[in-house]
Length: 469
Image (cartoon, rainbow, N blue to C red):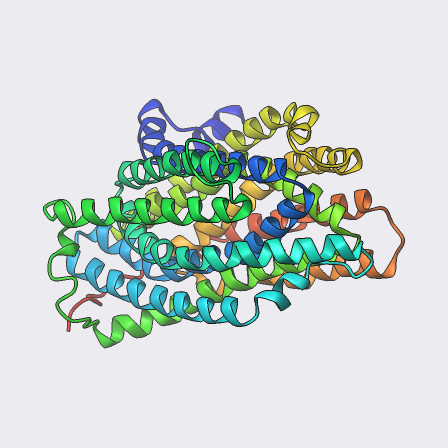
């Protein structure tokens, strides 16, 4: 039995060398980005609770935009990964064009919404039972932060379109270099502009927003320049902007596969924001505590998030090459490896619950609640890792309708009703409510297990020559 387990779930040295070669740069990129975001958050937190709350609330909406962009590039990315496995650079070019078009549309829509409804959106997360002065300050700081962050939507959207096609070719170091270069500048500008150091003006939350926007431009420029200067490695770049022709059948197929993913990512992240809004009914102290806890948890979540992305790249390429049995075998090993790595990250995160909240200039009750939330989220991390890996497994074979039900269905049919009922219909402590909603992920684990085990995801979606006219 032990030998069967090892054969099914444990790879050899070469397997882990190849996997780590792809995933480590991606984890490092995400880790460094999240680390600087954490430092940024701590710096803002030093200026006061209202400033921290304002920035935290706006970042909920920026997060929705970011995840929607990821969803937009994911659908075409399924085809791109399989075209790469097939050696079809023309097919990749068409998927890239589609990504640029859809990202541009999302940028425009998001910009209009954030400009027209900034006050209304921020007010959704502010309880009317809080102190009027605290409410006014939170709203003022939030609006100021959002107005500047709007500028960063464009470089992020276009940059992710480029980064996604580069990664699906197995080149993960360049996006990592772009991110690390950007966050270095971000960190310096944060320190200078938030606190008025290094000869820069002291402009608080506005400084934090400016630093973030500048870093997004730097990251996008580095990735774009590299892609266009290395055409021998990125053959899909040649002739990319000579019109925006995309074969009709491929366009139809990308829309069919991509729309469920786009809607899934949007509705999933919107669902997470709805849950956050439910928590906020219990007061701005809960908003502040959750912001602190999520900031730390996001740092360690880089491990399982990027392991999922690696599954999409590695398994997708095998499926596109028609190596279906190999894809199944590799996926089993990657699922186990993802959960094991995430469990390790969760254990490492636990001691931080003791001292991390003390880095913020806020009330003691907020710090205690934040510490508790960190512990609960650490317990949930292996569960998130497994369901995330299942999601990318299903997605790698183009089963986007199923992934839509798997992700969106669970969030809106289980998590949100549970959170709403506990917050609005009971007098339970936020401690109990947060744990119950977070750990409900165990239900999704069982659903994901049976979906992956059924092998419905083992599918080559570029077997036919879709990239031809």
